Amino acid sequence: MQVQKLRVQADEAGLVPAGHYFARLAKGLEEANAKEAARREALDAEDRELEALYRKRSASRANTYADAAMTM
Image (cartoon, rainbow, N blue to C red; front, side):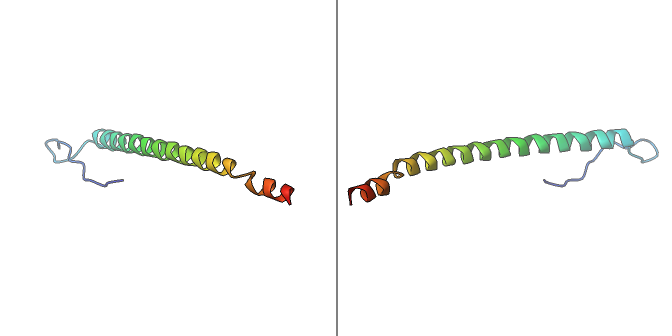
């Protein structure tokens, strides 16, 4: 997650309203969470594809040695 300063308009006294600050902070966190969730979903999908490919290829080799043992 990237940290950045939030620059909110100050009032006449130079103070930043806490509600605005926390609202912008929450919005930034929601965006970061959404981006992270999308990234994790893409990685999970890639993992599922790789696992399926591995299982498919290892299943095709599963009976190779069993057949050779029976013929002896």
